[in-house]
Length: 298
Length: 228
Image (cartoon, rainbow over all chains, first blue to last red; front, top):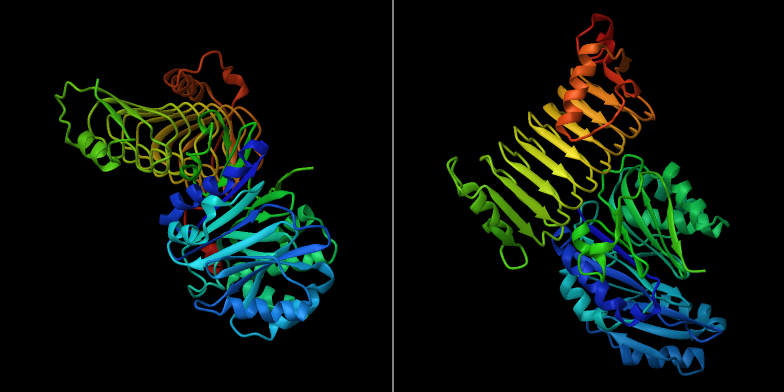
């Protein structure tokens, strides 16, 4: 099971509604994945020379104390926004490494995403409650992707929740199960990729991170995934400019896409798309197996 | 004509109402509004009525259908008319995976395309797809007819038993034990009948090619013993 969604807005007038639309799509897919949920929203750019870090903290973490400590290390005030257990922190790009090093020394904190535009939020619990906790309905942006999880390959934990980041402004959601993830994980660890969980989807994210770090484009990376990853999968990969979709060659996992002149949407099921404006006149189709699809704004 | 709006009636109530109908019912034409991709719409009907569904449906629409005619004015999700016994199911748009799966009888007509595994394990159903079908269609097909006016994807008829496959367009590849066979006059007569019942006019029968089982796979062969 699991449910995944993606929404890419062509019409800037819809941007203030991105979060509302995405929350509706995820809410519909609660019954495909009641264990945890997560989403990535591509909103406002960080100011020039800055990067946004999304931090996940344990419940009841002293976020005020954390910010004080980080600002002391950075030597400058750090604009931030707290959303439930997550903090989106804007840091000078030049100081990112120092701040990351400091964060790595603090137990109970993990950096779940980084980039100029991307913010990632994920937690255990029913997807509609998770999106409410983070206030997704009030978030604006150009595009976003999301996931509702029914755990099969590893434990129900926040670290096992999607999306998994694959690099700056990039993240992955996955519907399916990989059968060769242990072998691929061992190989990637030899290439210096680190993993936090036993989760199969994190391996797919790690593989893509590694490929792109080696200089591959997103399209080349998706094509390489077809050879490297065995099992069932439909992937949606968010990027700064849009999103990509890839289904395995057997295409066991369902996938529906729809497009109007105002938006492009992906859903595990058509049900997830029914509240999008003008869906009744949308072009609706299934992505072909083993074929990367990319929607990006240029 | 009973009209059921799924915006304010539950799917269970709709299906229960359809299941309560008796053979002598006067409520022979039903309309279903706002399906919005819901699963199992009009599944399990066993009376000769017509149900028109106005919009896209989710999984297993008209599953296990007997006697009824179900018309979907939209697209259908996975498992459309799965295990149909008799009657007709017609979809004006596209159908997702496994349309007509394990169907034992009746007629399934898809005006658009059907994706992967159309007619998987079909056991007597007739399927006419006016567009194309995806990979592994008619996988392990046992009986019945699959007619495709467009193209067929990879591995058509893999491990097929005795179903008849007619394809007008290109076949990307044939599956294991599926071969092309001559299109003889009695096949043309059968094909004409299927096209007529699906409302397809003007198709040139000579443009179709017939595929079926080479019958090498499903009998036990001593020389294959080492493979078991």
